[in-house]
Image (cartoon, helix red, strand yellow):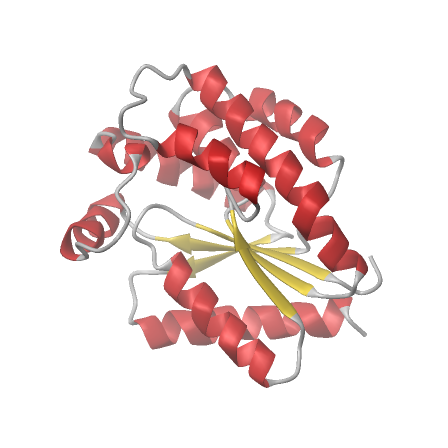
Length: 213
C-alpha cells in the first residue's frame, strides 16, 4: 500500500464521530500529512445512492439480510473506487464506519450472527482491513439524547430503532473490541470533546509512527 494508513472510526449514534473526524483531519493536514476523510455507507456516488436506500425512514419493511448485503455492496464500491487508490498513493484514510458497524448492527443487534455477516464482508473487502479502529464507546441513552438536542443532524432509519436495539449494538461493539483488541482501541466518548479528541489523536499518531516509517 506504499505506506498508506487505513483508520476507521466506529461507535453508536451520537458518539461524536463526525466532529472528531473533522478535528483530526484538520490537525493532520496542518502537519503536512495527506488525509482523506470519508464515510460509510457513502463516500462516492454509487455508495451514497445505496446509503439513501438503507437509511430512508420510509423503508421500514427492509429485511435484515437485505440491509447487510446493501451495506456490503456499498462498502465494496467505496473501497475499489476511493479507499484502495488513496492507500496506494500513500495517503491516510480516516473512514467514518467500516466492517465493524455491520458486525455490531446487523450481525449482533439484528441477530444475523457476527460470523455470518463477517463472511459476507470478507467477500466484499478481500482482506483489506484497517490498521487501526477507534471505537467511541457511549451508552445509547446518552447518544440518543445528544441526537435529540441537535435538530440539524440527519435522523435516519437506525436512529428510530428501540433503545433495546441500540443496547445490543453497544454490546456487539464491546464483543468486537475484545475479539480484535490488537486493532480496535476503545475510547470513552462520554467525556468532554477535547479529551476524546486528544486520546484519538494520540492513538493515530502512534499508528502513523508504526505503519509509516
